[in-house]
Image (cartoon, rainbow, N blue to C red; front, side, top):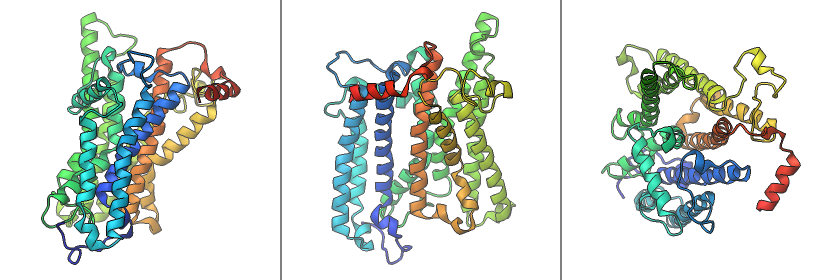
Length: 412
């Protein structure tokens, strides 16, 4: 109820429909639904995700499967969100003054969202909730479990957080505006709220978490090699972890240069706006290209960037790999193309008629939603890759489409 629209920037049409706090909530709830879909589909193709992440197994066959529990959590959080949105729309009717005055509604839902994660939810396993909270606590400082204790789950969750970096920044902005006496959190987003430091720092946190995890894994490999007196053929000397750490480090120049470009006086850093933009563009290209390479070559173990001999091996489709769990090679090709496109959404900024795309609230929300979609897709292939690494049984790429369709019909 703080803030006076008369003295604030004009409220854009998108923010009249979805104020910033609601956009943050929608992205988070969307992510939970996506995780449920991940678990559901992977269970249908007989990939046991809970065993990979060392998640507590069901003590009774009568207990609901993990994906159903996730759907229940998502439903539990979605119902009050929808009710809150309809109530907000009914009260405000798109009026900027009323939108600013009723900021309590979306922020009350954010409180429900936080409580929903911490407090017991009906029909949801307390063991699973405790395990999730323990994992969040461990990775929040860059910690990572040993392989037998659920390291893969820690990596999945920490990687997912990197896709929510901008959402975390928006959450901070929303709360900053809510507790400010000058702005309403449902008014025009004040992306300088809290000063020039806090938002870039918060956006950097997920990358710092993964960076520390990679460094921790490197030292674990080094210590293990020292104990045995030789380099393990399974883990090598740990160079892959340093290379992964470098990938996450490449996000920091992008964040820093973006913050400098938003500075009202960029020339005070000794660089012109054009120079800052060129440096930012170079940093973004390096980060996007490196991340795309890592997704395909390391996270998915595909041979697209391998030698010509490996790429054209007759034992597997071009650019893929021999052992695959998904039945159609088109899945992998579609994932590669989609990942490349969404890794490079920054290129919209290069188009003259979309020069201010990222400055529009609707554009920012779309970018955040597309990143959640990319991560949702990435998880399918990252989990499939881990499953293949651990189960080199009968070649699953021999599964017939008809067999898969029949199995889906039986499960339904």
